[in-house]
Length: 85
Image (cartoon, rainbow, N blue to C red; front, side, top):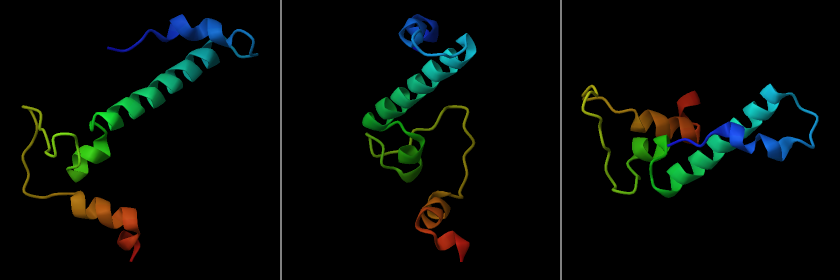
């Protein structure tokens, strides 16, 4: 369930911004807030990728593609800078 960004535009009235800029700003704030909520509940993409989500497992959608390859080691190497070597 996503909030309606237009209901928050009145909070930005004092600022000299176009309606499109105000809408973009509110949508960005909503995305940031959603990111914090996802992290709190273990639903952030990197938590799922690394297997550190709330249930300590990776849940796959029913229409997902199964693969024997994993990108966890590639992700970890990139995060530590080993991939550049």
